[in-house]
Amino acid sequence: MSNLLVVKSHPLSKEESRTLAVLDTFLTTYETTNPADTITVLDLYEDNVPEIDKDMLYGWAAAQKGEEMTPEQQAKITRFTELTEQFLNSDKIIVANPLWNLNIPTKLKAWIDTITVSGKTFKYTAAGPVGLTKNKKVVHIQSSGGVYDGHDTSSQFINNIFNFVGVNDIDSIYIQGIDHHPEQSEQILADIHEIARQKAQTF
Image (cartoon, rainbow, N blue to C red):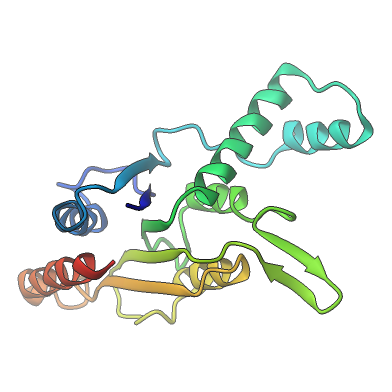
């Protein structure tokens, strides 16, 4: 039995988003193949994911000095820590996002900050930083109008971040090329959904 964390980073529905439609296909097959697993969906556009801001920076500084935090600082830092622990307690992670302006959505960057925490997901050593989150698996689902095959800034950033915190088992599903070849859209999507079903069976 595994804990699966689904990080949904798109504001639209599965009927409106290619990313979320493929995610839904993946999850449907995954649930059938792994009925005993616990699946948690974190919707970055609906759930509370605090960004690192003045409250959090001042709050962390106050905590280091042994000073009292404001209620606003405490609430944001408590939630930030909850998301870090949620990631640490997950065995498998799915990240689903669109490629926007050659990068990830800002909501996804805010979540990534919660999983890149010194002393929890990585540590500094004399030889450089070392990841601490072992034995996790990641699938990255991303849609883009063009064809990048993982060489875009967003995909490379996702891979680099997870590698940095110690996750090396990373797979990807790219929904790409539909805007360049709209006449092939139905076949491209059908092929991608089949790839999602196949990968879900072994994830």
